[in-house]
Image 1: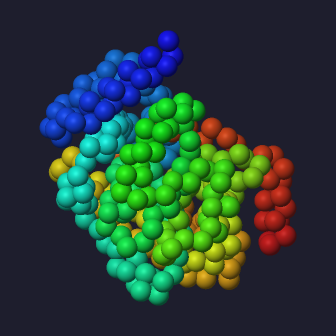
Image 2: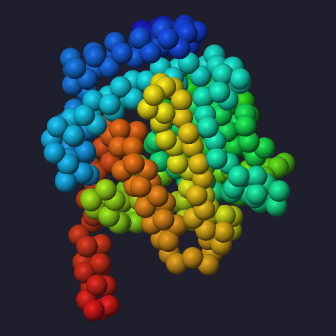
Image 3: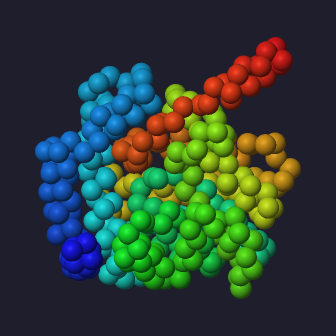
Length: 304
């Protein structure tokens, strides 16, 4: 029965991917109404995340951001399904790209580590990069529990040449030789195991950050770039992205420097366009372990 249901859903996804953009956004409007207005999907998680992140904002402003986020969330779902049947020309038309930094390093034949957050439609951006950039795209991802769905989405993600790397293989695959320079891309704004995280203040909250980005960057000794993505507020499904240099010399930077710069750049983009981030994720479900709190207090006392 489970296999029958899975196969039906796979066929449904494939059929939806053939719809026009106009029809897709009508479906998005209906899904938004259903899951947010009727079933209130993670409504308290979203609102609490927003209230804690922007304590200075009035409640009506928080509600407006949440409402825009609901629409963006369901738009991303249908845009991602559409990628199964998107043409290269259609894909290229949906992004404005500031990629001079990439061209600069590609001429030097240098590999790059690129770190980003869940801004805009990160799945669409992956495909755009594999079409537009001269670099080999290497993207770290979390595998889905259902193998059939994982394979379906992997086919979507790799259709234009992107190499997908499961999270647990990221470090080993980062040092694998490749035929041409590569971008090693990590989405680094999820919630790590608290005892292994780097802890800092992000959006007014005590926040743990995955350390893997810095470890990989030091191992490769590759320049590290932050990739920001902004949504076009006047045209659904259109985005702009850009790169900012974090460091050219990761081995020479202080511990956690790369992580702190990345989280600072990400916060700037979220403040600039708050409805554009993934607020339904339980980003702050973990708390800083007590032993780390004591260590930090001792460090502060020693410095003073």
